[in-house]
Length: 342
Image (cartoon, rainbow, N blue to C red; front, side, top):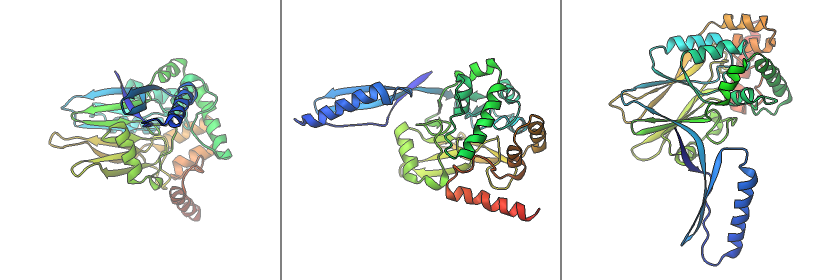
């Protein structure tokens, strides 16, 4: 089931301001024919007594209505073909009926079919990350959003390997995954996305996200909480939506590689909604897994040693230039600390 949500643009014109009206109509024509051709929006234009209103509606939000008796949802992101971490996640959450993966199932790790089959076999609901979109549609690169040449090089190595080793039937499945999922849970709505609700490969960092940014997303999408994964780092921010209600943004982290803290563990998240509670409570969970099992297969598959080092040291050795200064400093300090111990 799909629904629409008004977002992004509102203009108001009145009286005899013909210049403003003509500008409005030019903007309308441009956006309709060009700017929004690449995303899943439709235009709605209403002419009323007081002026003209234009809004955009997303028509690709997949709605899941959870049963009232449901009290917990498990969320994971970025498996990145780390089959050992996925096995640990599935085992640790085996008693939870509702589990969702926020995308980027392949990439970085070895043997992507193995991870995909684990996730599909366990019946996880999945949305489409940039990697899943790229592999599913046979694009030239992962669309990860990196700008640094070294990061782009390693991202391409990872993507070329993943695409070549992903079965056609799994590519077809990825191609059909939804971009956004909205959980209707009793009287609350939780929006699940990959990067942000606006862009699949947007990096949303804790150091760059204030209350106003979170509230803007929550209000625009009519959500009580938003969960994402693309940035790869787990963090949670709760904000007051009113005197009696709060909302949140939670990056659930990824299963595919550690969070650049010098620890080998990865992360996932839980949404707990006890019957007596008024809204779901977000919680981040650290997950230990058999690092050596994945590392051994990565080496056997000839993947870059830099990828393996990230799992073994807990520090990002590739695709780290995208990090803001605050997040980058954590990994740099841990890397220097590990070097000093050698």
